[in-house]
Length: 337
Image (cartoon, rainbow, N blue to C red; front, side, top):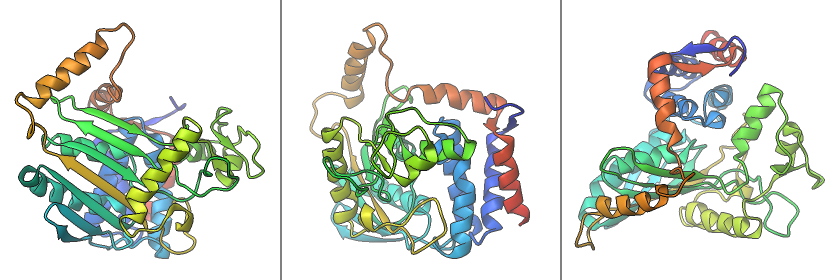
C-alpha cells in the first residue's frame, strides 16, 4: 500500500478518469468506456492497465495519435465472423462492439469470431472474455502489442508481449478467467515500476545490450523475456498471426508505442472467439466444468486462476480503490489543463 494513499469509490474514480480524458479531446461516450476499463483493471490488481495509463492516453488523444472521437465500424464478414475497424481510436469501444456482435452470432452459429484492426492498447484481456462468460459463452481472446520481445534466438524486439485470455461460465457466477502475458511479466508492470521509481525483479527483462536488468527504464529500452523461453516465443508468434496477420492490423514490429504521443497510431489488432457451450454435449457444460474444477481444488494448495479478483472487487465496493497521491495529482492536473 502506498503511504498517504487516497481511496476513491469506483464510481468516483471512473468519473475522475472520464473527466480527465474529456478534457483532452475524448468524447464523453469514449471517455466513460475507457474509464470503466481502467478502473476495473486497477481494482482487479492489474495496475499496469489502470490509473498509470491515464496520462499517456490523454497525451495521445491531444496529439491525435489516438482518435478520441472514433466510433468503431462493424461489418459482417461471414456467417459467424465480424470485422471491427477501431478507427485508430481506443480499443475499448471496439471491443464493446465485438462483444455485442459475438453475443448475437454465437448462440445461432455455435462458434463465432470477431477480428479487430486499427486498434490500441486493450488493457486486461480477462475482463473482456469475462463479459462473454457472463453471457453463457466460452471465450478466447488474443492481442498483439508494440515490439517488446525478440523471437527465440534473436536479439531485437519483434513481437509484443502478446497476451492470451480465456473464460468459461460457471453456474455460481464466479466465472473462470485465465489472463496471461507471453512475457514473463506484462510490460505494463515494468512501466508502472518506472513511474513509481521502483526496481523490477531480475529475470523479467534485458537491457538494450541484452544484459539482465532490474532498472525498469533500461528494460523499457530493451526486451522482455518470454515465459517458457522458446515455447513462449512460439506462442507469441501464434498470437501475432491471429491478432495481426489475420485481422489486417499492424504487426507488433510495425506498431508505435502505447506509452508516448509520438508518431502514427499503433494500429494493432485483437481477435475474440466465442463458443456456445453444450451444443455437442449430452449433459450440461457447467456441470462438467465443476467436476473438473472440483478435482483440481480437492488437492491442497490449489487455487483457481484469477479467483483473487473477487475479493479485490468486494473490497473496492466496500472501501474504495487505492490511488497513489502522485497519480491522483497527475490525473487532476489533466482535468484542469
